[in-house]
Amino acid sequence: MGSNNNGPAIREHSWYTMMILQKKLAILKKVDDTLGVLHTHAVAGILGGILTGLLTEPKLARLFYLVDDWQHFIGFFYGLKSGHVRAGARQLGVQLLGVVFVVCWNILITSLICFLIKLVVPLRLSDVIIEKGDESVHGEEAYALYGDGEGPDNCKQVNNY
Image 1 (tube, rainbow, N blue to C red):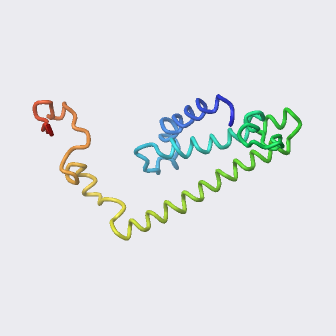
Image 2: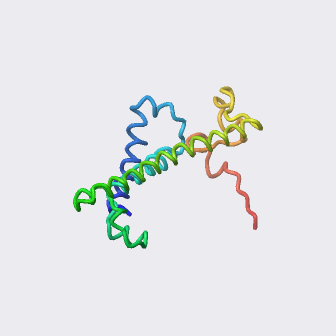
Image 3: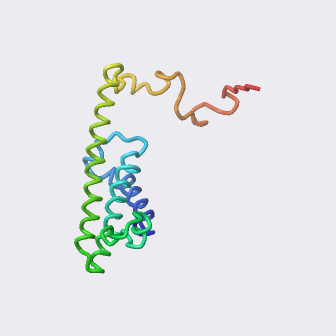
């Protein structure tokens, strides 16, 4: 619904938070996010929601909502430009409310899921097992590099045919 520039802007900001800010900000250093899920989903989703509230193009809103009063569904910047400031502010407010709802919903549901899992199994391995690594838990290395003595000649080949 927003500008065509949303995608690249979101992608670059997500990369920036993952590669640069993750190493500089104390709060992000505390996040145990091996796969970059926080940056890929949370940062991108929040930025996408806010940019949509700012940049929703009126003609696209008309096509999306299929209503006659499509002027009520415009981005904040288009509202400033066209004199429909209240409609633009409304759309931005709806987007911000959506961001707050999704963040709260994720905190609630993730906490509930973690609580239920913790009733069955521990959520985190002991420090001793973490120090030993994947080999002690799974019986194999997660990333067997050839420089570590592993090579094509030493690899176990399984042929199912």
